[in-house]
Length: 246
Image (cartoon, rainbow, N blue to C red):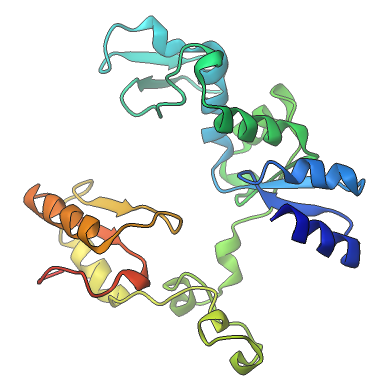
């Protein structure tokens, strides 16, 4: 994607570019055109501060089992965790063993002009201050972007239809930035309210994960066999494989 993006920048001459962290090469592209590159982050200031502290201080090495708690140091509040919920990358004890792609993505987040967050200062002021002043990172909170959709009907969908006529686009699918859910929102909330708190597992592999029909069927049978109540979000192009009752 680098070459076509650079062609576009050459034509449009933007003042800056905003890219996902998973496109670390955009750092070089921005430098080539002498413009700032801002990365956009989908997580919170709190999560990043905790993750950075774990990466730097590795407090999980001070406990003997996955169920023992440890304190994450140098944070505005006392945060206790166990090793179990940590990602495999956070549990790596030596930097040299971290996969190259993970290193590149992390470093690109530090090299750019700054990071944009889909959050707002009042939600987590202590961790905004910690991230920007203690860790010394440039950051802007521009959310919550959900408020772009003003009414409840819009918020129940992933995105809102644009005002442009869909026939001016290549396909009808592109005329919607998000797909409607196949289940009525009121039915879903009613079902959630009928269950005990913290009893539902939410399952979503996001949009970049591609599974075959047979893999999805195996997942469905495994989830059902667990006896656990769940909500499972799947891509619309996966329709047709669903077992009876799903």
